[in-house]
Length: 474
Image 1 (tube, one colour):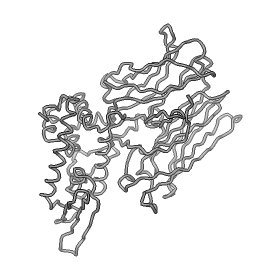
Image 2: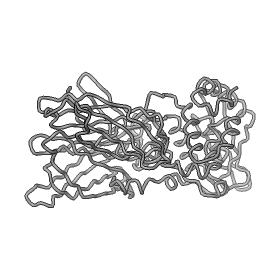
Image 3: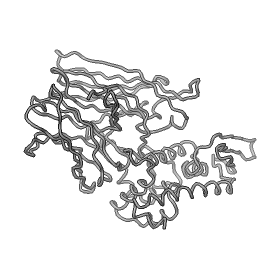
Image 4: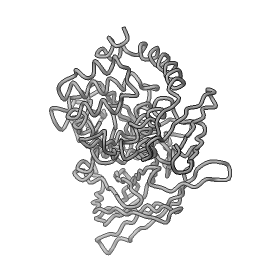
């Protein structure tokens, strides 16, 4: 099978639930980047993170190369919100950025390497320009001589002329002359086409909620010696609280003429809900002996600990997604593991496309919370608890917003127009402080009731997948 190796720019709906709620959530704003920070995880596992004007994450993987070289797979991920978008003549929003990778060898006999790539990304709506997590992935492969390098990645926003840089020391070792396997490469997605397999890497090694499966790729070298071999994948928890996951994937290795092989697979996830894990690959010979093994770290729902400890605040965050009966059940859930399972269960039955590795509804909901907090916060409350935030989170984005600020002493108005459903919502700022209050209560309740009925029918059909919440639909 021929593999399509390429430098990829991919816009993904992969918004992690990076939400922070101060203890006094109803009087202070919410910072979506603090509480669920994965900084310690990134630092422990040497995943590069740049926090400057253009924040990004980056990682490298070493794959078998030709002759004495090693293929270095470089992955960089960043958010739409890290870049400045401009409106194009055809009505889209476009950002332009440059990725530069530099390898400076400690051995003077090896040449330095510096490469750069100019990329652009387009989205259809302004809301999409504000996505705050791994929405853009760039990847490329470079042939490198083994050795020790000072490695750096720089990402420059070409519209804003801002840039950020991250660096690390890379030890690039040659593959051994016996059967060997590369570090597993976690994938956002992969797809088989007539011309081969295309894939998108996951530089962060992070899943915002428990996925139904883990997609991955491994490269093998010298598997024409000895054998036959079988590759086996398993997930190993770093802590007992994370839960366990048994080996659920294996495949016979068939090598190319040069003794290399490349395998793509999906490890089904039945048990792992949250925490840190090692994704392990073992190469097994025909006697059942493990010849060699490699692993890569991953984290599921880094927010899990915060959710368990701040359960009331967590339920406040999902108040617009949950039904009243669901909230009654969830409020009584006690214990860290039970709360994390309840949280994942709640979102599992809302997943519109269970076949994918991400939960699009969860990601979209918290994307809208981020927008509400940015657009409609006031001195009195965070944006998602404002009337405009509530309408936005429950009815969706309006087709048009008409603002009517008026002279001092009168009341400012804001009208949200929903052309697709032929109604409008009026807000009035009676006391100032950007505290617009819902005036069209009857219209709102009518439209919300219609949406709630459709949502309840959908959830009732899916509730068997979440026995905890089944009584909410009886």
